[in-house]
Image 1 (tube, helix red, strand yellow):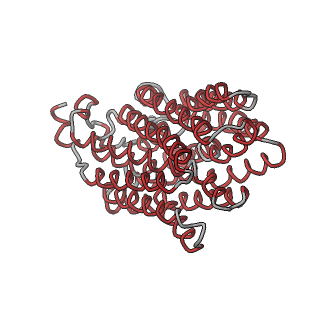
Image 2: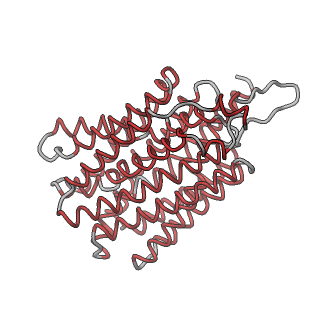
Image 3: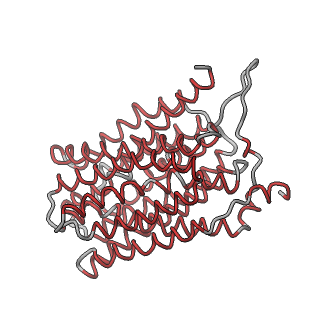
Length: 404
């Protein structure tokens, strides 16, 4: 194994571990905290959903700035700062005494997640791998999914034994003690050229300028895909545990099902990455979004049919990681890497805007209707629109690179 291969392995390890703890400990535990917070503070479904909304909006609004900075400053600097901010946010949230303060401190967590998670990891992985990029991104994104298997179960156990506040402090400790130093030691935005060695950067590095990309139909189809997919996916995801509890599952079994779903996501991103490298990102992403929508329909019947629960876990789990693992590959295929950080930041903002709208939309519909049926059907329809928009995306880098 030469120096470049060793560096590549260390980068993947660092990114995988970062997403395992930070995404697994923030995004994947939000639903676990919902019911304990409703019980402790007597909040409604709509009120507790605002935490996810503020989290998603803050993450989304910060993503373009993070992407812009990554085009100019090495990830070795940006990502540890982001991770540290996320850890501090969890410490502050653990002592929150009102909805306002909880929203504020989860906003701090979201700023840190934006600076250390999906956009930075996508930018770094895309710059390190030109061949088998989708598989590399799949392995990295699987870190968040693997964290989604472990962190909800651990969090639920800590909540049961010590309360929600202690659980938040435990997540903060993992981030600050383990992840911040690991990122600093392992992660760089792109390979460094060492004297006497050959280091070929990805050919797409010339790519398309930002302004030119914003004028294309493909960009706006990606916008539509990200908003609809983010709303449908996260509206379902953040209410999965409360929904399962509402139809008769215990909190521990609901957490176990959420963990199992995350396990299928970890397998799914690897499966999708392999197929995207062979077949292209566009058809694979469209198929994954369609499967995700089908999984939501299966979810509506899980209270009466165990086979539908299994079908949900497979369909929803295998598709849920597509917007994080395959969408960045499609973005690189369409526009190249020249302004990939800025474009990935914009896409991240749009995805998290949908992610912010989804939970509060579903929570509001539940409070109005008294059940999740209408809300989850709306999520299914949004994912169908996202799949169709993906099919309309066409590569434009080759045509626009010269003009740019």
